[in-house]
Length: 330
Image (cartoon, rainbow, N blue to C red):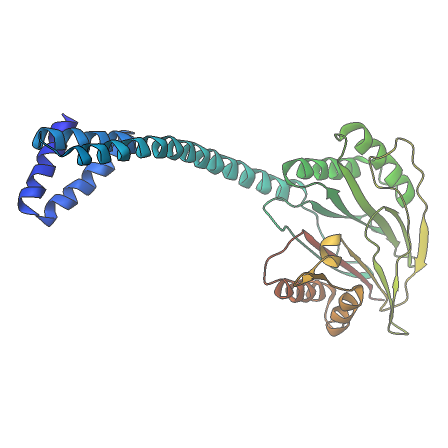
């Protein structure tokens, strides 16, 4: 039936050269696609139709048609593999979108806005899944802040971050020492995360009564202190092994007094590893950009800093970008 329809259509076109036949040929190809007829089968139908219409085809023409058929058989196989791969990619993309939405829900955190700190935070994923994470804990007296980066990306990284957040939320409310927090989280990560996946993390808390900022680091990117009185920046010196490498790890804890206007600036390596062309930026450039927007609120500041580095990279992030600024208001 298919061969007869195609033969009649071909015969009509060759006799009349009617453009309407080309339209019907287009419709024929669409129906063939719906019926999952492969390209080489179409070529074979064409060859059979020609041989029925012109039994005395020259040998060279027969050979050329045979050559075309062999070519289209290989093409058809490759085309089917491509379609199967594309369908799998669509399925995977859909699953990743669902996972990304779940990640946003699971890792959602509320930025405290009723205490002594003016807080701004931004976290933008380079791809669909974010390998960075930040979280705030507010118990009225203290404001806790966590920032982390998974060495590894995608869905496994998102699952790691969900585990970290769940662990943080289940710790007792009176447990606020950063060194203890990191030690407990290290046990969780070491026991539950596959080998080769590690997490860098910085955890600190600000006491709103004595204005001391206590903090510890598990191999995280060094942040910055800003001293308002002298208008100077100082690197946060805090060392510690990344989470998940060893079972029993002890972390050092540090403290810093914040005067009015002083800031704590935390970020992941997606900030320090921004590039201008093929060159990484210098940390001094981060300082210069923050200085440019220092008159703004903390949230406006992090938004403007992100936009600056987004433009610097032609709006193509190569790594997840997370920036947090804590500034003492009074």
